[in-house]
Amino acid sequence: LSVRIGPGGSGGPVFNDQGQVIGVARLIEIHGQDIALGVPIDALRPLLPLSEGVALAEWTLPGRLVRKVPRHDVSLLSRLSAETVTHLLERIERAIEIGAPLYNDGHHEACYRIYHATALELMRVLTGADKVEEALRSGARRAESQDSPSGRAWAMRDTFDGLLDVGARRMEHDQSQGERSRLPSSSDRKVPHHPLTLLSDCASPNVHLMASTIADAISVGAPLYNDGHFEACFRVYEGAVLDLDRRLPRCDGAKRALLEGLREAGRRNQYSDKAWALRDAFDGMLDLIARAPSTKN
Image (tube, rainbow, N blue to C red; front, side):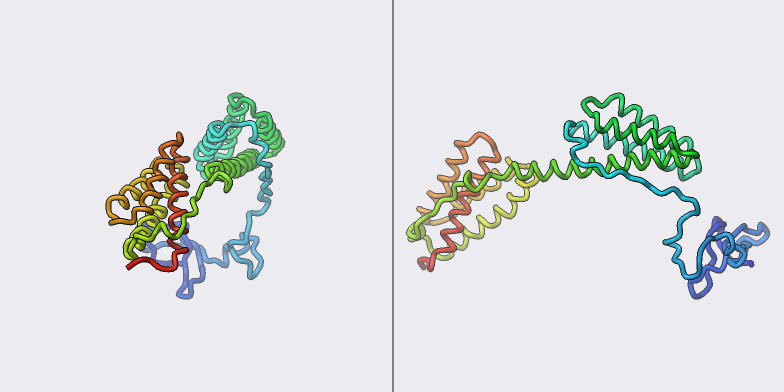
């Protein structure tokens, strides 16, 4: 089989006009720059343990080891700080970054030695991590029981992937817990319930201006708060109150209510609490605007 192929294409598939593989490029004939010799697919078919109609994606190498990635409970890391968990995951990821390319290049023993050395190092340096140490020790024992360097490398990789999985779940759990801890309970919030007369001196355009300014401040500030930027959120809310106090003609009752929210924020120590004081003031004002049947023209 001779085909036209560019330099560097040796080992690649040769397709017909219907997208079917008809051969594999083997080598380039030095006297013809674009001419390569290929091996017909029929000559290669006996080497492939593929039954008719089986997709290539479903094919696995004969004798390939079955992976056994352990599924740990998050309690495996319950005694470890967030910093220790981060160090554990980073160290494992670094070992994989070094070892996996070596394995893919055929250096299975080198890959295994890197993984095994990393496990030993983690067992030595981690404190208060008895369950993690046992997981690593169990993986090392399983690796040592394998007959080939390839099997030993994969046994250690299974151990690492199990720890990466539980570490990721622990970090997600910590993040969700942290976000919930930032939010006050309903009993802690103090959303004021204003009488409708508070808007008696506020013309309709000014009410709309107040509502849109508050809504815009919340749309900007709330995501900042949820990302942990409490002071930034508070500053956005504070700016909206001061801007309304400056721009609104009359609307004295509404402005007093918003400024009272700002004073309440000043009495609190944490920026997260300051932000919620103004959010309470905003929600109280939005509730009043929603209840008002009409405004003065």
